[in-house]
Image (cartoon, rainbow, N blue to C red; front, top):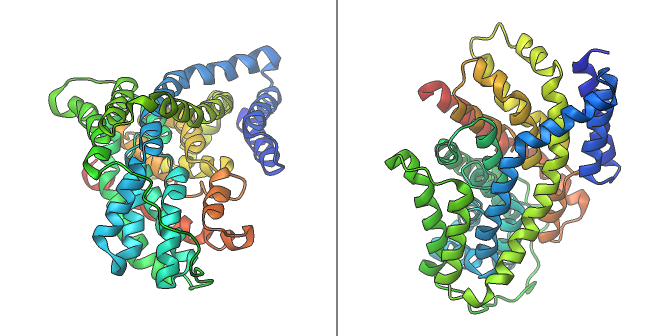
Amino acid sequence: MNSAIAALIGLVVSIILILRKLSPVYSLILGALIGGLLAGWGLEGTVTQMITGVKEITPAIVRIIAAGVLTGMLVKTGAASTIAKSIIKTLGEKYIYLALALSALLLTAMGVFIDVAVITIAPIAIIMGSKLRLSKFKLLLAMIGGGKCGNILSPNPNTIIAAENFDAPLSSVMAAGVLPALIGLAVTVFVIIPLIPKGDLMETDVVNDKDDNLPTLWRSLVGPIVTIVLLALRPIAGVVVDPMIALPVGGVVGIIATGHWKNMGTCLSYGLEKMSGIAILLVGTGTLAGIIKASAIKDVLVGMLADWSNGGTFMAPIAGALMSAATASTTAGATIASASFADAIVAAGVTAIWGAAMVNAGATMLDHLPHGSFFHATGGSMGMSVKERLKLIPYESIVGFVLTLSTMAIYMIIG
């Protein structure tokens, strides 16, 4: 059987198994195994390609685990809540959707997982929505849209692994996402949210607002600022500080700055727990990426786009979008797409930095489908049923499309 068709069958099997609620990790591994065997590589050859795929993303996995220190600091010290509350208080009730979206953008941009960012901000959104009688659909889309915007310029797993697979500096890939993220934020708040029907309004007195002795804003920002400065040393001064160093250093400094050094262990354990799940998922995605990369899929895609003057430009976001749809995960989508197509995208003339940025943006287009955890975690944070949560999918997809289109347009102009 043609290896491209075999790999696609393996991918489809993985999707079906994930939809059937089988563990995503085992679904991906089994799909990879089936794809390799159907390609005629035999058991030994198939396992070799699967292991090769995992080996190629191992450096990124190590960096992602290291990033857990910063995540643990932001969440467990209360820094994330402080930042969100400060933004909402500053912008006020009149601009509540902008405040929620900007809060989610900044939290994810600082390294908080998008679902954790939404869950962190959701209680505030519920309070404000109850007070102002706002639509829960609009409130949730503001947070999700802002989170998606922040995700393309963050030191989160999707950005780390895209940069790693393209051999591009993480700080440069993050910088490439700044302008598209701002465009996406504006379109989300001022164009997409007004289009959403009101639906159910938040009920009054849903939850009480508690301060919980949160750290001050400036103390909360110390850790993220240190991380950003360390990562920025490479493009600014030519001093390379690997994310594996910059992310945990920023996290530790942040823990100390917020006065939670006695709770260092709690912060580190939380961060490791969050990143461990992602790391294990990446092992599964690595096996499938190894099969896809060894197959002829990339050659087929290159052939389809060969007559396009900007074929490589389209290949990057298409790969990210398709793989994120298959896995319902930004991280898994960016992993498989970048690991499988990075060489072909660069060979088509796209720079490594913008190739990673476009794959990363493309992975936000369909990462919110119902067979992924993000769909359920975000819906649950606002007390939505599955039927209610499904209504937001078209609007989320538009946000991802805007981010992708903006990234492509900026690359075509300045890339």
